[in-house]
Length: 59
Image (cartoon, rainbow, N blue to C red; front, top):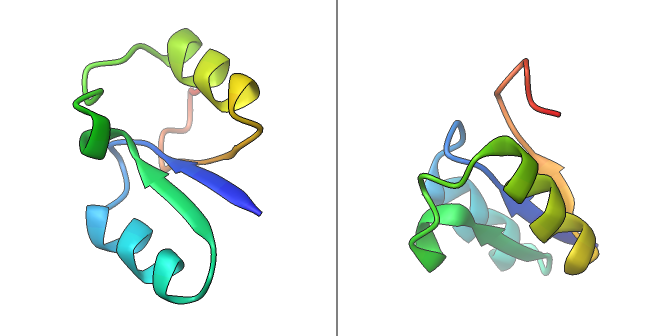
């Protein structure tokens, strides 16, 4: 399973998920911390990733 973590979650969460064998990417790792919600959804769809967020109004 592939995950995309947004800025509401700690980068360490992505690191932990990778240690557990998951393909996890945090937006900060690609310099995308200011990406708007619509672009986050587009990126997740394009990369076949599940979005992990703490943002209650995302999408």
